Length: 255
Length: 268
Image 1 (cartoon, rainbow over the protein chains, first blue to last red):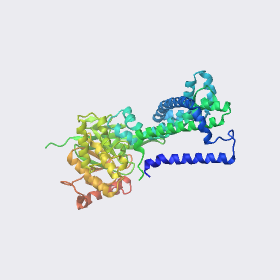
Image 2 (image 1 turned 90 degrees about the vertical axis):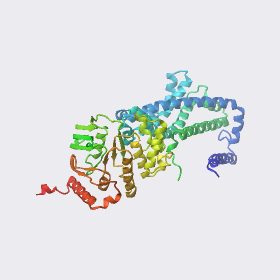
Image 3 (image 1 turned 30 degrees about the vertical axis):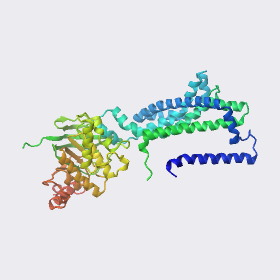
Image 4 (image 1 turned 90 degrees about the horizontal axis):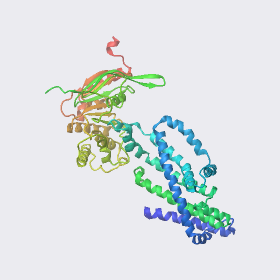
């Protein structure tokens, strides 16, 4: 089997295997729907609510992406400040850690009160708050561990600090940045759904999940979980594709 | 023929670093002169301020006292007429070898067109024996090859002064000797003034026109050896009685610098 064929076939083999095992376990133990829905129960839900799934997935997706984009911009800026200034790094670090330690589920009601009715903005805010931390930390570490020789080869030619950042520090930090972005992308997704479920406002996959809960439609709840997983995978591999393009040089060919 | 002018001149340069335990003086009234287009090697005990010297000459640092002159100009800041290569080749992993070598031309003002710059880079690659590697990534090259590429980068912008801070230190003996010969080829091709920091006495004698032995910290120029080898040098020159004598002298001076043997005059 070629490498590409294996990369495409392998996940499907495992997905089908796990679904089959699940189906069998539910059937064998004779579990009712409210204990555990089986994969075949989900298909009618997808068919029946297909339009809703598309609409709600899109709402969840775009708000996650905007929140993540905000996290990339602010996280990179904070990372740059901390990477270049030791004073800022030592001063900001405990604050960042403390902020990151606050469970975001507790922030949701506060944000919902602060910006009452601005649901999209609130959701983006939570997605951003939960995901900027790894980006800020990795960028600051990438920049602060830049070997002095790298700086010196350009500085000895009279290059400005901006040139050194643009030509050396920034590209050299890209692998760390993408490593953090892979973590942040799933975090942002959690943030979006947190807002949608903890502070229901009729939007996103979280809303669909909530209506399944209220109407006792347990297979629908499971169907939403799968849709969320699919979106998460989609976003993650989008980041992987970006990484290939911008930091593909850091990938060593297996020899 | 008129006497060559002085390219690098240090006038009574002293420098100290601030440490927790107070100032740590590394250079003490160091004087040296390197004539234009000649090659000067600096040897000395570990920690005697050799790397500090390269940072002062390149303008990356200013001395506490004294003056550094390059070609009759006082050095106050880095200048584009200087090329540098370090023990770590510091190639940028995300660039091809070609783009690594062209890096200085992105910083320094020059009159080369893109095609001319590429041709020059290809020519230098051929000189150091790396023809055909221009589109490879640094990770695909061995240590010696990376150092060769780093040398090309350090002279792509035709610097007047090339500063080499132990560039061959991390290489195996055969690769090192190979690169010594490459250095001579490069110098024959385009003249520059060289300042080489090294721990290898054979390297200093083979490459340099004068070898300066630094004393222990805080360092001054303890001894200057004029390397008197005529014509094109080959590695065989290192196995002549003349070379053996020079090496013995340098060894003796290093021991004095390390404080192991008292100088003969002092013993009397």
